[in-house]
Length: 185
Image 1: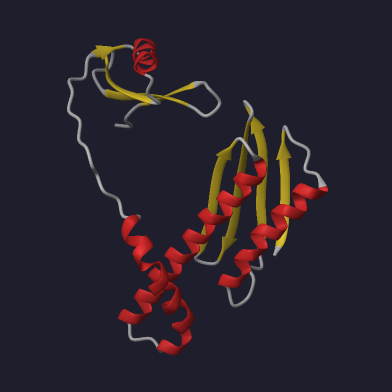
Image 2 (image 1 turned 135 degrees about the horizontal axis):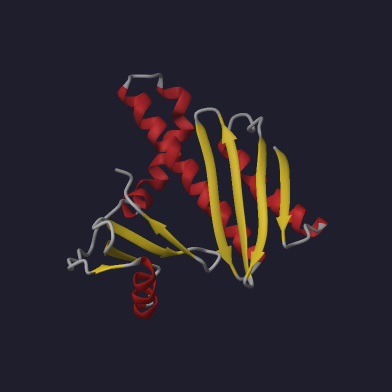
C-alpha cells in the first residue's frame, strides 16, 4: 500500500506516520493482492479533538472511515476497526452473491469462513428503529429554530419555515457553526 498522509493543524511526525502505516497495513491480510491505489489519510485537530479520515479507493469499492477522539492513537485504532468491519461486510455480501449465482466455492472458501465468523456480528449491526416521535411543527424562522435546538441540547431541529411553509431542518456542524436543510422542489 502507498500512503498519502496529511495533517491539518497538526504536524505529521515520523512516529505518527509509522503508527498509521503499521495499523492500516494490517488490512492487507483481507486482500489477495494489496490495493494498487493510494491510501489517503487526513489527520486533523479541532477543539482539542483529534480526527482521522482514511479513504482507500479500490475497483468496485470505496473504503472510508472517519473517527474523532481525544487521543490520536486511539482514533487511529478505531478507524482501522471501522474499516475492518466494512471489508468483512463487503466480503460477506460478495460471498452471498456468488453463492446465489452458483460460482465455484473454492474461490471464496476463505471469505466464507470469515463470513461465518462475523455472521453473528452482522445481525447486531442491522438497522432497527426503536423509537418513533410525533410532534407538531411550529412555524418559525431559522434563527428561532436554532435557539430552540440549543435550548433542547439537540444536534438538529425540525421546523416549519414561517416564510415558505415548508419543512426545514437546522443542525449543528462539526465546526460549531449551523446548517440549514431545505427541500429542493
